Length: 354
Image (cartoon, rainbow, N blue to C red; front, side):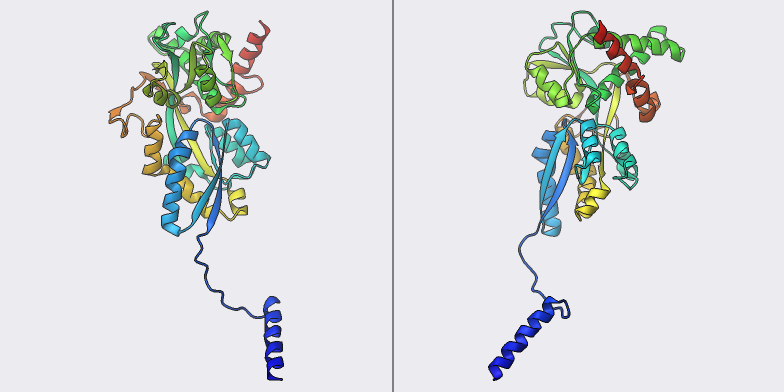
């Protein structure tokens, strides 16, 4: 009878516990927890993330918390990544080429914090737009006017899909404004400078052989032997030149300062219960280990003119370097150049008709 009663009591306690009436202490698990982080990034810095930054962050997080981190990363054209996130691709962290792309995600209500309050205004990497030419520079290209000469084949990606391409077009247009002042030897009227900038952009666009979807695809096309000149990030070219690839790097005297942002996508990170992990990853991108990895792979220090620790020497400083702010900021430039009636949009339409 005692056995039956004991068995019945044990059974009832189990049932009651399953109903949540009692709570029994559970022995803590010593098995290492694995957490997931979903990263959406533009294509250019893929090597920096996969070879250096992600493994370094995994080691850091393991040491700090005892947890393993599995990073599911996606790389593609910046604009395409932003649209995918807005369309439902549930990335916890967005690392994109343009602050305008991050702003679009913010406007969609998916980023709810002020991401610009992070160090360097939310930017995590920097570069300039540069030119790549074949070994020996057979076309004698030294700057933008040379790239605009008839018979010179040029590559850059499509600004409709690639943030890097938007930087490329901005560099050309801004260079046209700077060259107008240089020729005049003094500031010129905005309308006159704009006319010369449109002319330069038009002549270079006529020479464009291929417009790929992303900066990385454009470099791949160039490496297959297509084109005489590629317009791209300096950091895409610098490591390849150092490794002995058969082309050369030219930093034009007139070019734009590039900065690339990173932000936690709050809605998705909250949904995945990964907000702390996502915030830690973005903070890690601002830290010394990630910054050293960016610089090792050809990016510039975020502080313009600073010495690059990997090389021990200052990178060449373009004589007439300008920023997106000098041109009126992202919203203004995006509409002026890439809107439905934008300068570049109309140039492409006109060139395609001829």
